[in-house]
Amino acid sequence: MKAVISTVSHASVTVEGEVVGEVEGPALLALIGAGREDSPDAWETVARKIAELRLFPERDAPWDEPRTHSALDVGAQILVVSQFTLMGATAKGRRPSWSAAAPGEVAEPIITNIIEALRARGLHVESGRFGAMMRVQSTNEGPYTVLVEAE
Image (cartoon, rainbow, N blue to C red; front, side, top):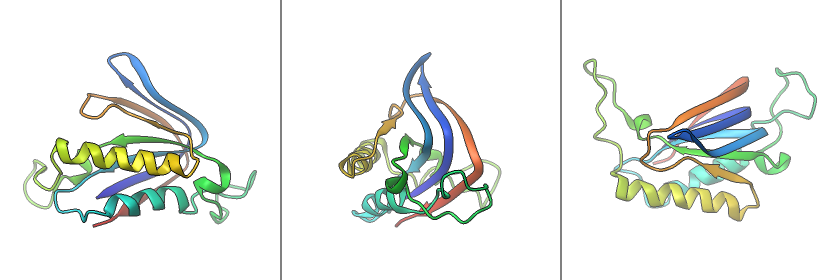
């Protein structure tokens, strides 16, 4: 499982012209790809990392100051977007292979589990629409983006 997590001041996801999820800063945009070979509890690790990684600086601190606060600490909103393309293999050839991505019927409940785990921690979570063609917009802060991998 992979997650690309960015600090944002605003992010939204639109499906067929309708905004289905939107967050305002302090906020995180979490793009998440579930893998075919992920361990059964990998989603728990990803949810914990989204909630607890220190990705935010002190309030009003310069952008290059150390990041000392988590989403939980600052009450960040989170936009979760399922993105199977994160599991693409690009080592060979010119066309990514998606064989490592979990099939939709496996991935969808995993993404739902992550969203529910974040909400259970008291975080405000919005999401995209699983399996839909989505338009994701974000205003990144920093930019500050990290890759989380859980197997």
